[in-house]
Length: 99
Ligand SMILES: [Zn+2]
Image (cartoon, rainbow, N blue to C red; front, side, top):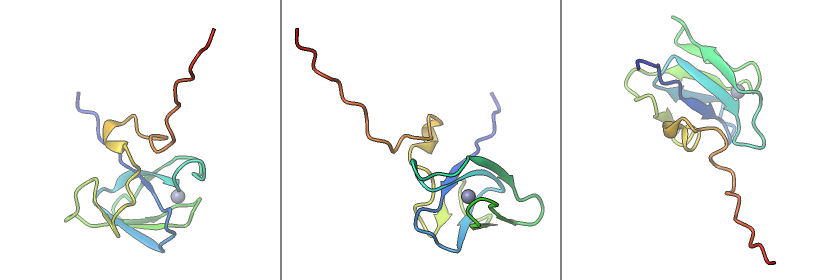
């Protein structure tokens, strides 16, 4: 399967720009539950793109890997598994059933 890996990025810390290692990506704005609609963005040949939802300026740097960001920490947690979105949410704990 040659499915392209599309990393998801957030801008929880609200920096004006995030440098990433891919030109096609998803922006979710912030980690859930404060995320905006998950939008697919393609820089094309421009090498940069402003997210229309959160106005974050994304810039491409070929020296970064697809999961690296500058500043660090803007890749959505758990994205490598592609189970991805929502992985940062608290796990649902088993409720003890007494009967
Ligand atoms: Zn955004």
